[in-house]
Length: 178
Image (cartoon, rainbow, N blue to C red; front, side, top):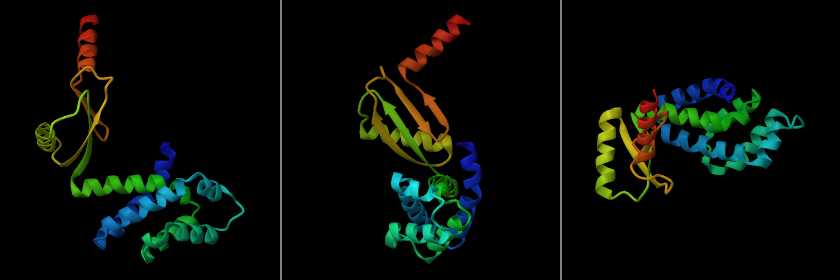
């Protein structure tokens, strides 16, 4: 998996820098997400892996499958990827592009797992506190996880804050055993 990210990183960075320079981050984000979804389809992935198609055929097929979402610049990017046999990397490229975009916009998506549905005011307070702590705009998505006894588990990228009862009990158990 790390190898795919290594291969995808230069393409994601190039797309990001181009889109940022033209102030088209949102359109590139949408185009890459669509192309990534198309390339992730099992039938398309099989076609992309097949050596019987030329790079030009693959590029034309991808562009047709994506429809009107791809502008001329996006289509050129798809052609470059096809020419370098990197179309299967589109999901990774899209994900890396989104990370670069979030970093640029100083925003982060946060998932909050709780044992019960959070009230709107609690969710807003949590978003404000996390925004200050992470120094970014926070977009909170809440999910109910009935396996939690109580408390919350917060995930923001690689950061995990385990404030659940189970997490606290595990920490207490570790402290008592050491």
